[in-house]
Length: 242
Image (cartoon, rainbow, N blue to C red; front, side, top):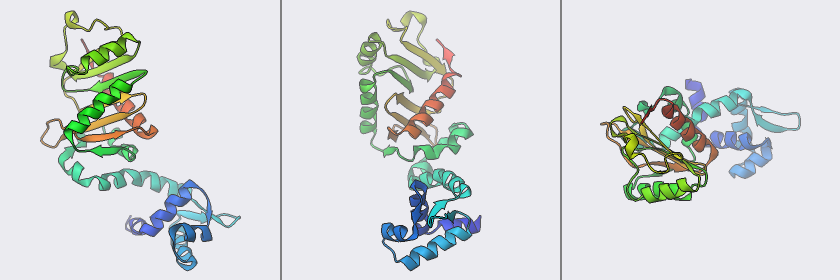
């Protein structure tokens, strides 16, 4: 582990690995892209080769080995945690199942929004722009300002699912008039605030002292969307019906 971390501790070697992850490249092209001498590029490629992270091909290009690809994949969560270390010092991801913590590198392309007002506005815009569905985990019922938007979209055929605290589940008499397109379930303990549409997603983790916080991650890339959808569905299946 010490030797591996030492090889990954070089910015130049990490840049080479990332470039080779995109495509096979010759040494001279690596030198050009990294703006280093051919001698330096050769030296770094030799070290990566000795560490079995890259290998030279018959056409003189270099490629990431299968082992190297695995190392890069496993390093993604660590890199993401390092980038946002101040946020994770104050927030508790261990409310989530371990399989989702292990996949947290899939959030690496998301943007961290720390301003509460901006975060709430983004969440509202997400549902306004939805064209197929909107899923959410929230502390209470649908916010007052969002109610008319949700109802209008539901009448147009959009499907909504909301997970809220179990003790705030509405009675059947208080279900929305568009109940066929709006499903609500309850959880005894909410792990995070989540919003997902077919276009984008958001996740806000609890603070370490337990209360919810509306600063969190927002993104549109496929990896983040998949992570957020999988997490929502994991808890949806555990939710109690109204």
